[in-house]
Length: 113
Image (cartoon, rainbow, N blue to C red; front, side, top):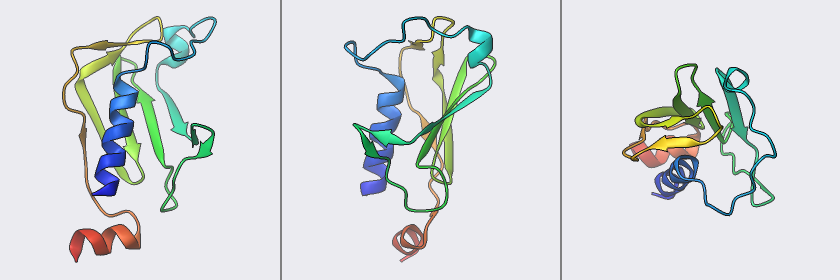
């Protein structure tokens, strides 16, 4: 349950950034963002929690504006939110669909036990 709640929290924060969040002085050009993959390494100055050898979380910026990502060994994406040329996100929101498989021994025991 904790993994699901944390994954949901990250997915929501990726889709909706707060208005008072720090903004870069100049957004990278879309060509620089296309196909890029970002890894979450810290949250509020604390190392991102890792329970396996996989990155804690990643965000992928597709060449067509699509977004997707990973949560440890799980992957997902949405057709409802797109990234824009100015470096923001657009869309009405909607589900971000992720796989749910056990990545670590602790997860596997919790999901199968």
